[in-house]
Image (cartoon, rainbow, N blue to C red):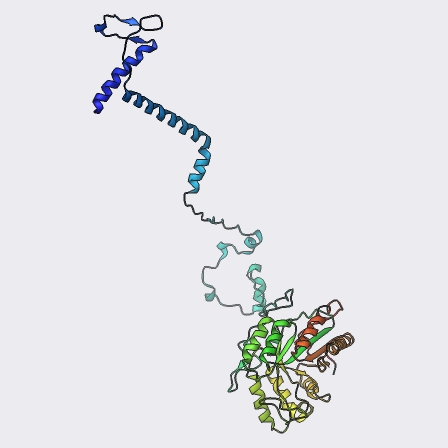
Length: 434
């Protein structure tokens, strides 16, 4: 059945359907009736039953109406949630936009200090002849035009110690403090007077008036395992002295300084038991001429950069010989280095010669681990406190043995509570009595 026929039947069926609702209807003439009002009291016009297709179409319209009504109701109840869900599915990106701020108005003082534009000279300043006497001409200049004399450049601020005692040391090498040589980079005094022992020193507050104790662990670098253990476990307030013939010396020194340790060189010197006991390559010997010893000293000094000075734990014979020590002390002075007399020989003349030459020096008051038992090390550390309390400062020297490191760390835990401060050895330069 085509669409036209279907619409025709639908029109007839609908007209017939309207007869039963009391509306004005027209009854065909063939049935013999006139125009009449249909209703409950009037006669009913006869009509046939609706077809199956008409019922199906009416049902479809009813279902569609119900669906549209349900959809409208659902949207009315859930419109907000639907919109939010739809917006959430759309990709978005937020870009912060910084609004340019209007330039701040100049402060009144700055405006008052600036000369008025109308008074600006019409010709360049270079074309004006200078006053004959600057001292007389200066008062006539406007107050804002007078410039104070340039202040000398200030040194970079020293980073304050952190909670764990770590600080940032000056990176080495510093330009102007290095002299190239066949033995490597040698320390030197800069043209402006800066000295390596001061530039490479670990910062220490000069205003701290507590008794100072410096701990120096010497002979670092002889054993890689021992040296690595010391760098891992020791606090950065401990000064470390490396032997110049250590493997990867420059790497060890850089690691130590990066952690915050002040660094020295432990230069090999002749002991009383030489040649039975060999102090190491290029050791300074009393039997050699001064120029030979100076050449060996330069070999040691050129092996690394960033140290503040030298010491020696082996030179019990060499440091007791004034003729052998004097050229060494003079070289330290010329290169701006410090000397720590380890007093391997109780009759060492190294410290006294350094004092006479004006070389910054310090003395070892105790060897803290000559006896490696825990009780003996603890006793030496207590003696250092007694010396520091009596003299204001003390230096202890030792080696990076595991027992030494253990006792030092335990001793440091209560040092501040007992009224002392741990300091780098450079902070004790020239403080100890001869």
